Image (cartoon, rainbow, N blue to C red; front, side, top):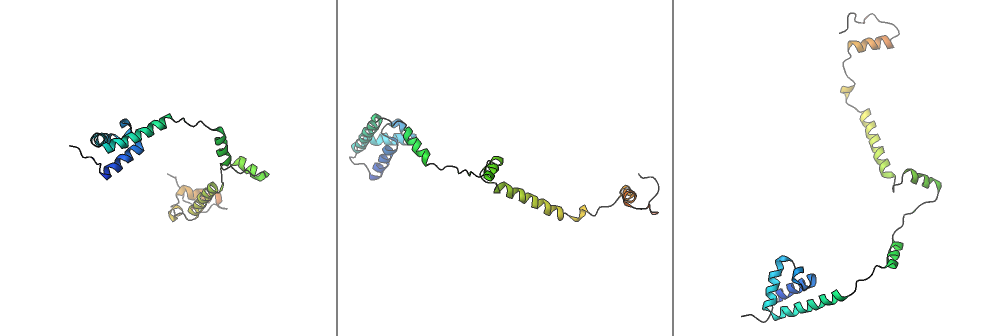
Length: 159
């Protein structure tokens, strides 16, 4: 015993299935195939919906494909934004040296790295400056920088 009317929810879902995938079952999602086939077998209204979708599919299959239009392609490319090139010598020279869009980003990165280096160099930790001077360093400093060789230089062998 089959009922003659399709529920509105099933009708909406079936119409959506036909609108999206067409009337041929091989195009439908696998999880919907059995459900839709059962509805088509049970309800004449579902068969009518399928026949309408099949008619639309046949009509679309017979319609010729639109050939590529070179005129349309040229029109689209003409409307595309163009790069602006300045004609003055300084800009052309800068463009030859740096062919990318803007130079402010790499310059700001380089400036930031330089400022960070200067900041780190001028405010480095005090343990870098307060190191013990060994005998060899003191002898070198005394001999090379001093005007006279002082008497308080440690004598003996240096290990």
